[in-house]
Amino acid sequence: MKGLNPAVQAVILALAFVGAYYVPFSSLYHTWMTNDDYSYGLLIPLISLYFLWEKKKSLMAVPIRPYWPALPVLILFVMVSIYGILGSSGHISRPALPVLIVLFALFCFGWNLFKKAALPLCFLVFMIPLPTVLDRTIGVYLKSISSELGGLFLRILGYSVHVSGNVIDLGVTQLQVVDACSGLRFLFPLVALGVVYGYFFERVLWKRVACVLITVPIAILTNVLRIGIAGILTYNFGSGMAEGFFHDFQGWAIFMASLVFLFIFSLFLRLFSAKPKDFRKESGFSGLGIKNKNNTLAFGVSMLLLLAVAVLTFNTKALPPVKIKGGVESFPVAFSGWTGKSSLVSPEIIEASGAEESFNAVYQDNAGQAISLYMGYRSTAFLENENFFHSPTVCLPSSGWKTISNSKYIINAVPVFGSLAVTEMVMESMGEKQLVYFWFQTKDKATHDKNINRFHLALHAIQKDNTHDLFIRPITMIGKQESIEIARQRMDGFVREMMATLDTFLKENQFEEPG
Image 1 (cartoon, rainbow, N blue to C red):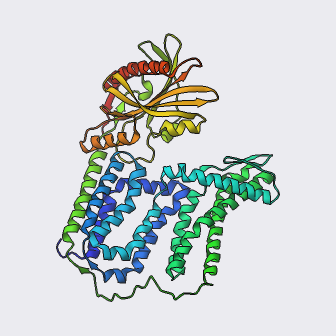
Image 2 (image 1 turned 30 degrees about the horizontal axis):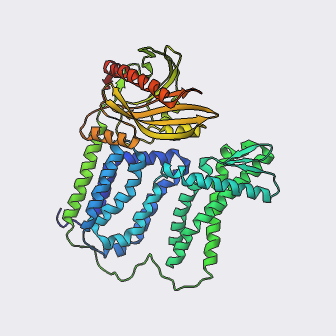
Image 3 (image 1 turned 30 degrees about the vertical axis):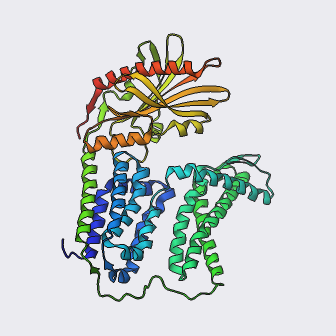
């Protein structure tokens, strides 16, 4: 590859990158096509390419010199991305994509070129859906602010309202500000719009930055307007005005209003004169072509890294699903002094929980003590998945149970695993308490932590050691006069008996489905 034109290298690297990271890219495309909140994501790479095209003359004049200090960081993020893909974590593999693009460009083509291409490359971060952790933290905060300000807006207009949490009580009806209306998902594309607007319509750096920063208060303001308008329409015409077509139309109209506010702000900026500089027409470079300082070795290393990702991904994808005859729902409802009654779980709940199949039953022992058992099963345990097993640390509190304690707990003398590490939670609701265990397990590894489980899956995948993946969650009520220790003894005994039965069940019924 000696002497290969860097422009050709860039095209080859881009194609190899998309091929190596086909799994997270396909998941990303699926999200763009099926989730209205992120449908704008399809435009982001196109806008980024346009930014690059506008800078092509200055980029062609930059001397190419590999930046080797970036290699350790690049290798680290490649490993993180592999962990995300093979460990079924889209929340890790997809955010890694724009970071990897930046690092490959920096390493292979050098710091000087990266400085010129920083905006187009970094702009790609807007194509990634927001991580769930932001929805659960910043999103909750913004939802509370939006509810309060929306209620204030309605009071100013003369409506009598009461705000409690994310519920706006209008007297005749209630308006709930759900996660999608927190403004966080609205803010992300609006910031991207601010970047684009500043790039095309402003020539002074501080004004461009101001166009980006102003999108935050604009997003909050317009989201409050959206909630207020929804409240007015709901109050006068019924709850249907806050749902379906009207809800979606309001979102579109408010986004257009945000663009108007941004334009008004840019008119305000014109009051502050400054010597303009056209950042899109870089001066000082008049070279006739890219000056290559021999980056052949860096290019080769980059291709080898992408090849390693591709081989690991596609070899793992070829592993057949590990199915169960009759499905996991055929798990026994009677074993060693415990008898139970199973109940069906709807396909929608199974899909949302991150499982392919599930089993749910309530067991009783000879003394009438009850334990509820849920198992989620994944026959294709590898490769990034939009949904992974949901943790009870989120699901149970959202259904009204308050977490009193949450800690790691060890159950001894458990078949197959010996000492089994589980997450133990004590929950309370309306004076009642319950003890919850949950853990994740492959065919020979178990853990209380979802991230460690993903690491186990990655190890199985790298070794081409096919496996299933299971999420198991037993729950028992803690009696009024009962200590937690007594409830633990009951749960520990149940887990030992259940795990012995599960081991036999899997050995007798598992098979690899032909590809």
